[in-house]
Image 1 (cartoon, helix red, strand yellow):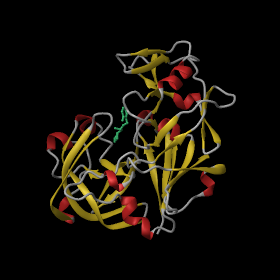
Image 2 (cartoon, rainbow, N blue to C red):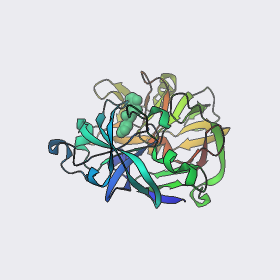
Image 3 (cartoon, rainbow, N blue to C red):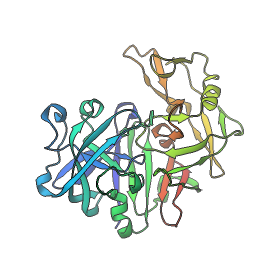
Image 4 (cartoon, rainbow, N blue to C red):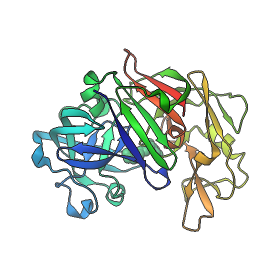
Length: 325
Ligand SMILES: O[C@H](COCc1ccccc1F)CN1CCCC1
């Protein structure tokens, strides 16, 4: 089997939500290559936390007795609950007995984002949080039945993009795809990014260890790289109240160039201009921020919306393919 599903951006491209059939209900889920749990708002979620969300009704599933899950994300958000086996359909691709993690508690960030009915993890199943036994991601459940064991991400700025499962649609990218091998030891699509440049010119230095993470909004890079970037933005400075670099929204940002698998990709300055910090629209928060305390760099949506990415398990070593959109 193979299939395609729309990835619809929230305001400021904060996250991208995809329609997924879970049991007999269609939910809008955040496809997250940075985690490996498929969890959903459900009729078991307290009403005080689930108002405004579409809900999974576990009555259509088979309860996995004694199984629980509890996940915490890098930004401090989290959720927990119980586990069911049920049918999950993404763009026509069907997992007949997918582990569906029904939330019995969610953090305020999820409670407040009423566009988001849950997450569909696409990292490696080794980091799934279900106890007493880790469960397969949707991709791992269907991988063997896909035309090719891969999926692609084609996210866009302020417009619907797509995730494809089982095939590479060559109309979605230009030029060639350059591949890097993935280190799965931490359960992420983790690889080594090479040189970078600010504005234009030839790349140098090294961004280093990084993950491709569709569930993270921004790009988090080494301090040296981030300082080099904002040194080229006259009005920029680090604002500890906002927790990152801000600048005058009227200032044009430079492009950011990064070398992956021997090919240089350009993230346009307009894509790096993330969002105003408040309703006055005077000061803006940058899409490139420091990776301090994270332990690796994160190439999140700010980066991903300018490339076509192949999450490829066709070989014994998983790999990531990057091409210009
Ligand atoms: O929690 C992730 C973002 O994690 C990356 C990250 C960002 C900032 C500081 C530390 C970090 F690790 C985003 N959520 C994952 C699921 C929903 C959004």
